[in-house]
Structures are given as structure tokens and as C-alpha cells.
Image (cartoon, rainbow, N blue to C red; front, side, top):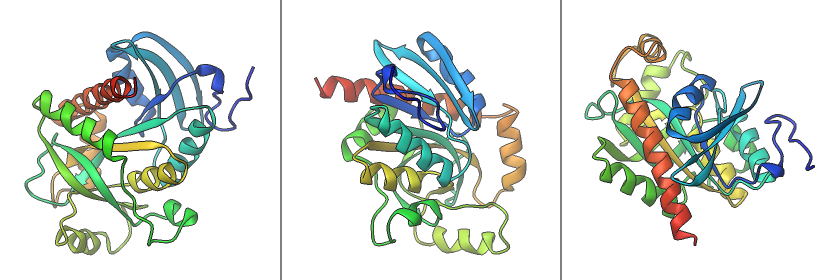
Length: 248
């Protein structure tokens, strides 16, 4: 038996190439209904894992917790067990008024305003997705007629710094669609390790809205943002099917 990875507690015996990666462990409960032959694998720290099949393609679902540091650990250890492509499905706050609640932001590049990606390489290195996996995500969202936007996001490390409103306004003026905490680390570490990555974000906070109140409503499943979550799950799973077909 292959050695278990230290944090995700999985090994290469799992034999899976594709990972869908929410931040919240509870989101696996909402991914599982889309999969066949679901097997819960374990829950260590923030890393809850299960496998299943979507249209015959084996998928690993693994939560990464909050922030770039735990995401980077997941990328490294998933690489070690043979995962070749990873799609983050997460939430974001909108930095543009035309990004409505429940809209998807399919990220074409991320501002590296996080600490984790900067521990790997200096800021001259771009945080961008794999172009083919990005295109598969766009095709999947378009085919399903989900509301989506393609563009730049900003990844950061805290909601509560004193200058947060000013920082958001600065980046909004420069065309950033939304902000999250994990995409930049995923793109940066994934590229450095030869992993195909993409990020699909579900907008849960209106531009200028209260982050704490909006995220609380989302966690309680009270509004249209739950539709956005379902849309990003389907988009990611369909993108993996397209990637699998294109690689054969």
C-alpha cells in the first residue's frame, strides 16, 4: 500500500486524476448527490474527502479549508498521489456591481494578494489557470446557461483588516470581478507543480455589501447563492468530463 499523505490522509492507491475542491467541508454533502458510487474517505483537519463517479469519470472531492496555506498543502499532497487536474469551487465577494448574487466568476487570473503564493515565488510570476481547463469550464457554464463572468479575481488573507474597504475599491477600479482567499495559491502552486487548475467562484456578497451578513446567509442556505453553488458544482464536473474526453 502506498504511503498516506500527512494531511489529506490519502495515497496513490486511490487512483484518481481529477479533484473538485471546495473550501467548506460541509459542501461535500452537496457535491455527493451528483456522484455515483460515493465513498466517504476520511476527515482530517480541514480536509474532508470522498470519491464518486460523474458520467463514468472518477472524481475526488476534497475540502481545503479557508485560505491559501491550507490550499497549497492540498495541492502538494494531491500531486503526490497522482491527481492531474484540480478545480476550486468557492465563494467570492463581488467587486463589480454587475456581478449579481449567485453569478459565477470563472477566473482567468488572480491578484496574488495572499501570503501563501508569495512563499513559493516572487510576484513577477503570474497566477493563471490552465487554458484548456479554463475553456472547458466556460463551455460547461455556457452550455448549461448558467449566469457567469470571465475575468480577474483577487486572493487575500483576511476579511477584517482596517483598510479592507479601501483595498477593495482600489482593485475594483482596476477591473477585478471578485475576491476570495484561495485561487492565487491554487494557480501558483499548481503551475509550479505541473497541475492543471481552474477556479469557479460563486458570488455570495454584493458589491459594497456586508461580508459577514452575506456569508452567514449563504452558510444557512437561505438565498440564491445556493443556486450558484449548485451551478458551480455542475460546471466543474462537466469540465472534468470534457477534459477526460479530450485526453483520450
